[in-house]
Length: 440
Image: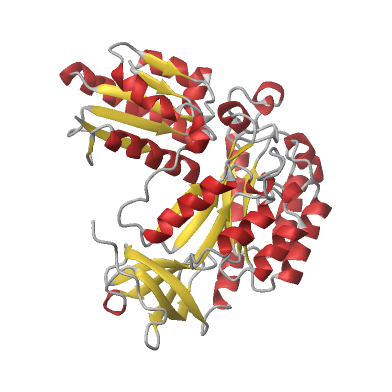
């Protein structure tokens, strides 16, 4: 039997797709690269914004036609599967297997059934599962905490993924050790709010302590996503400063620069607190690369509110930013209680913010010209004749393909910068030496 997995959404979804892929392989399934080759297609869904939901709707319509033609088995998992919206979609398009984010380990049982199988429970054994290392990968994700205890008015994640539950540190360290043995040189620790790690389990290390533990395991590069400003404490910054393996790339979502909008978002902090965290990061990690998330056009946002977001952007001077127009999601308090702004207002503000982002990203990127950085080269770039990787600050870096013939870590001098890319050349004796892909 052959299976194909299609993934939408965040790195957590990518990790979960790898988890279920390893389950399928252990059950004797062959993973294939297309729907046409597959007997079972499993769609891992995202529900954070409307666009990925519409992509799933369109895909399920296509899969239903394929099912009518040849008897395809259709599965749906992820955040959308946990919601009424997704369940109605599953019924409409003939989904056979529906698994919420907490029920991934039910897949073997589901495949044994000859009838429709739906499981939307939050099973504890999903925390204990250690997937095998991804074959031939130099970078990998490791989930350290699932769920979220914050209740931002625009966000559906607490509903879809449940409350925060930390994985046992022994399981995390064991998984990372397996990745290290398989040749992985970069690990990203994942969670809806990684800073909360250990708070729900007496006796567990704090996130800062976990960072130190992981940073001492011999993995050259350790990163983490995503942080919440309320929980980004001084001890975390200190742990990053004192642990060389921890990359000094910090993604700290602000969402808005306006206290009034932050209050309507239920973000639990205000502008002054956020800027205090930035000040502390700059003080203790002067070379840190900062990125953020910003939602433009949240219900009730005035032009004055938006100007406060622009002024905060200037005050911080972000290296990178992920910017989105507000997308109303059924089931959230904002959807129920707030009136959406006209789309043309949201789009116009987003365009202005993008121009601000380009301006600052270019300014920050120019600071790297002439410096030597460590780049993890992954493979070919879209630009002909180049390979692409990323440095420890998560900047995309392009290198002439002839200088980096195999994926791995290279020392690269940055020669040129654009708002979104750095261009460099391999220098010296390629120290540390490039790490070839493990043999399958």
